[in-house]
Length: 439
Image (cartoon, rainbow, N blue to C red; front, side, top):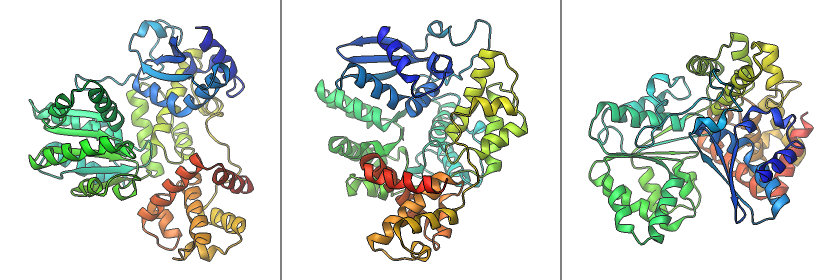
């Protein structure tokens, strides 16, 4: 498709050596009709990685080249024959395929390959208890944590365990986005009775990224009544979110109270040892040969997102398959040089606090205090955000270094600044200026 080739050419101004980028080689143009472009990728993992790392630039270039009304949709196409250019015949697959079962659960995501450490042992134990006794152990179970820390894995593990050990149970697994889209389709077709029949008669309801129903009044209304029906009948409900229920904006209080009725478990950023264990387990699963030096290099250069670790491994695997070059630490550094931000030194939270205090002309002690005036609370939130994104510190660790603040306060600050950066260019400029000042 000429349209896609034009976009790929424009991407060369953003990414080096675009034509040889293994991620872009697996994007297949499907159609471009009425300003709606459809691109396909081979599996869920590739879809998520490309959405997180490339989609915004693809959309930007598409709109710049073909007008603001252009829409770009990424879909999964499991036909392996359309990706033969990416993986030579007879070679192992460069991109791991996440197989799904009949109800959409990711079969690869089970408790046996979920690495447990201090950062997630509570959430893991609670999830296993729910899987062993659905509707009886903890109901609802609400799991929250940052992007890419394993919430989707553990949610699928619950569903897979129940399906394997409790035959005949009706399980529904989906994202909140899919729930909303399904609702919209049934509203359009005037089949709401059918919609309610499906969701209110299951035995286990597993919903990923429940925060997506923020600002969607009709979806919240249906979710509220679905929740009540299932809860009253002792049917198991599990939600995941990127934040605490009380921190999700624009959601009805009655629904937030339902989220908080059961057990709330958090998943924190893992320590270095747990990251290395995750890397080695993932590498073993995908038949990627890496040594300890590479494993620790990846672990130290990933701030928080475990999915990012998986992405690094996939990129390394793709590179070795496509080039037939043996993997070592120097090759790994070269292949990942465009993804891993180089640092002249390791920043500390104290470095960040000093830089933020200097920028806003306040004292570091003000950042550590309990003062709530905006001229102090706003810099404190930025400092917490930078501490989270530029260091390996967990939410509780950051809280301790900001005057023993509760970790929920840190989560709120990080989420708030993250949202402000997306919606307010002046906030983004402040953050970037502080980061630049720290080198």
